[in-house]
Each structure stands twice: as structure tokens, then as C-alpha cells.
Image 1 (tube, helix red, strand yellow):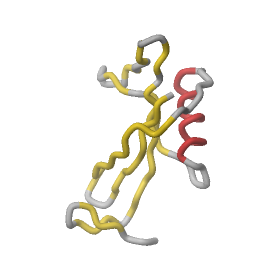
Image 2 (cartoon, helix red, strand yellow):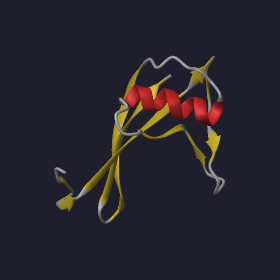
Image 3 (cartoon, rainbow, N blue to C red):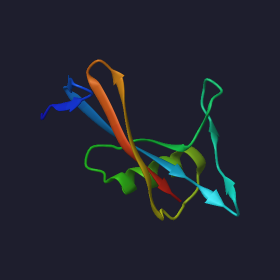
Length: 93
């Protein structure tokens, strides 16, 4: 596995995530997380999935909706724990 350097720290593991900014008629769909926070629909991709395949799956699993993915919105990353970098993309849907 290839190591990735993030903020000067060598990360041994990387996970890829996706989120959908789902909009309809000037409204945005937000979900409640188990801790009560609001979030966009999405999650981690599974092995062999493209980012968009993972996003279609995550949105359907969480909402039952079939959406159209329009364009990438923003790329992001964060360190989940000392050895895991999560990097991903938020898409307009």
C-alpha cells in the first residue's frame, strides 16, 4: 500500500468518501446524524467503486432516492485517527 503524506504526517491508510449536495427547487436535503448533527447524504466508497457509484449507492441506502449527479462541488480531506486519512468529493445532485 502506498503511503500518503498529509500535513507532514505519513498516513498508512486512506479511505475515500463522497457526499451529495442534493438540491431541488432552491431547497437542500440534510440528514440528521445519530448525534443530532445535520449532514449531507454520503459515506465511504466500497472497494472497486468509483466515487459516483459510491455516491449513488450511499444516497439510495440513506434516503431511498435516485438522484442525478451533476458536477463536483468541492474536494476535502481529514484525518480520522493517527493512521487513517479520509479524502473525498462533494457533488451537486
